[in-house]
Length: 380
Image (cartoon, rainbow, N blue to C red):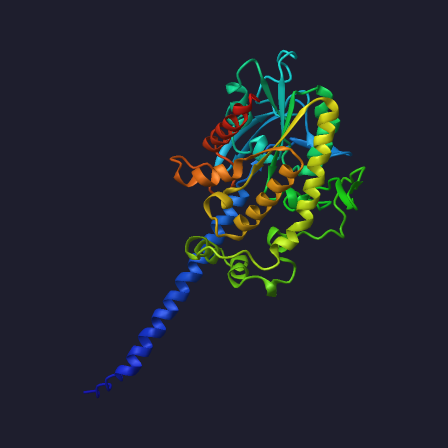
């Protein structure tokens, strides 16, 4: 009979159990991270837009192709878009409606254009449907445009149509930051931009090249907001950049904190340029006899994750843009604050969970806010 093995020391047994649990925990976290990265890659790959929506434009960088129709497919949605003869979204009857009707032309980026929703569901369509007294609304938003392109677009394309009013919707997520750049952060296409000399705007990069220069390196929003030295970033932001799991945990668990040191100073040039750009549009509109209104719209993080870095920099930009517009005597509608107040309690989500653009319910909510703010002064 073989001799039996001596019993394992209790202390060694506890150590063995702890090591086993730690190893299982590590393997579980690794599996979760791999799964989340796979899911993100799959969702990113699901974003497919029928070709031909945009075309090069030597003055504006790009514009929409007249008469284009197509589908935009994403994990979060399936939408169809139509473009009018003017190269603008055909979600209202304008400009084919009676030209005696007073018209508000809305300019903006993909949030105003309505990425993710059909022509019948954009907030501009809701505004047009709800406007009393024969007023009309037209959607002149171009996906990817920042305020500088919108200012040029208003002068070149919108004011010659003699609108009663121009409503510029500034998206706080990236529009103000892109104003400083010859290539946007999220659209790798060259564009015109303005430099500030004293208090004057000097237009650069026109005619716009068809390809971005190789010397322009791609940058992320985080790098622009916090600076290029990652060692100076908050520890949780550095981890979020490396791990999908950490990003989700940070959004769900970490409490709101003070904005990172130096962030507001880095945003200063963007706010200064935005101030001069909206003043340019105000002057151009006044010379053409058109009213000018600014609306501030923020992204999903600002509304639903107020402690996150994207929410913090958008809030800083919101406050600065409000001060700038008010100091210029420009009517400004704070859609971002109204959405933040109500979005979390909404029965139907106002933002797509992965794409981040407004859902059909979100467009209706934005339209309701704009109608409420425009109506008291008889501006609908």
